[in-house]
Length: 229
Image (cartoon, rainbow, N blue to C red):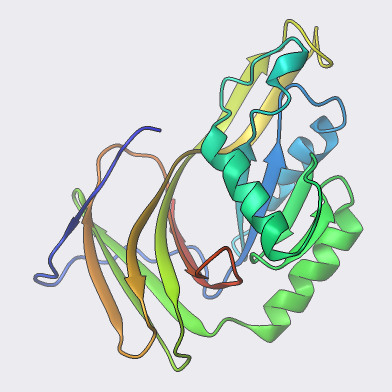
């Protein structure tokens, strides 16, 4: 994976660029260019990506690569993340297209009504932690606070807003497909117990959008998130 960041000590006050929305719902799509049933879910993610109340992330897995087309965005780390979700949910299999809502609810990614019902449920419930991001040059400041102690990991995600690929082999051979919010880096940047307000500075490079997720350890629920586009 490409590396974009270095964690720094907390210093100074940074200029503020507001995140997209308070307490957005995180939708992770596990997909593959080699999966013939994935294009409808990929197209649906374009719609989700336009919403300020949703953080839409496409994680391309590599276990379809053997059937004739290697997904150029796939990473074994994203495959491992999907398997970790399955283990946390006591599920025996993984599949594409799969969407996972706020790290908790699993649904077929080509079923928009079910996805939107789950998004609405999570929006109405809210998040235990408020996360805010600000940027000054190559420094991102992360702030979070709430009142729920636990074992959490702080993750920084980068994505490419849109990619178009001509598929030459495999189940989607001959198709030109468009992908939204293609994840290209996923880094754990810290641990947190939720007891005191979180303040972190992180050095980054490049202009890709930035997402910060706070998630219960061992692929538990996502309890706070924010995005800078």
